[in-house]
Length: 193
Length: 193
DNA sequence: CAACTAGTATAACGGTCGTTCTAGTAGAAC
DNA sequence: GTTCTACTAGAACGACCGTTATACTAGTTG
Image (cartoon, rainbow over all chains, first blue to last red; front, top):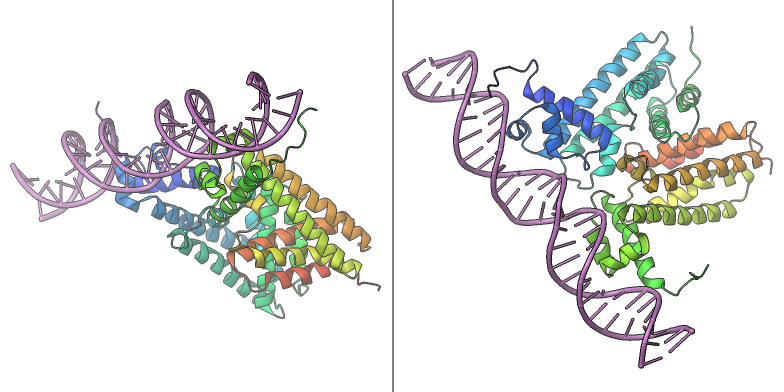
């Protein structure tokens, strides 16, 4: 049989897309390399050519997701009208992801941190990178919103943010996003507009 | 019921102890049944005799941990001096667990919810049971502390609590426990004692 | 004594895991 | 026209997975 059709997207992109769907939906450890390859419609050797192994594919999956998250978050920040709402925009972005995912499974980086126990795993760097940026960007936003202690406010918001994600995952609490916005608002000076 | 309590203490208990250590430290999916059996110093058939399979062993592991958590939490509540501090006692108990675990891996029930995707898994009931009790008990404590809306306060505290656990796991934030106590205190009326 | 119980040790089952290897094809570049 | 690149299909690997089965031991109990 002749297989002349050239794929519209590159093999690497389709591998990342397949890995993104399967790792997030079924978990990293429960998802075999064969399943990723099959969903991507790609040869097994191509995966090893591009990523060298499962561990590095997992790391790439987390970084790709981080990139997308940052873009969506920044979009939500840009759409906010007040400096206070720019801080709250993280929950707008979270709400969007929560509603968009086929079945919400929480933060991919946190999930990975739960599944991976080896500290030397290449995915660890991606997890730390994601959470470090989260805190730094929130600190900037809190400072712009005239928070008395921007670093402290940002750290508090991180706690609230992580709790919101878990609450959305477990469905243990009604309206966690609304709660998070209210709790966060209490940490910021009232908007001068 | 003819099946009265036999003095079969060691085998079952040692299986639960081994499962508790391995599942929590290495994750559920990454821990094989053989490793549990080996650590427990027990025959493989004994595991199947008592639990019928891995899924039910996982569920038993989560329930055993929930029992221990409740006991420690209640002890922390009993040790608190004011009604406000009785609400905050959940963070005393959390701090104790965080400091006691060899290596803290977050809430076992949340970790299990991340690893398990099948909604029919017997462990799901244990997870829901744990989180439901959490909210109900917090509601009682908030009511006793004269919170204006005990259910709402308890739900807020759950969000803060879950966020604290994730923050402790990822070490992404300084002093999450202190933060949680301060945020929670803001949700309660000042103590009249 | 005989039956039952709880436990032991060991082997085998079909299946999946991540990884490596061989061999081949289509198209672009030199 | 040959080489190079990106990809394909498929097989094989040793290891481990959860589960089941067989056969045996020791202590209790009727």
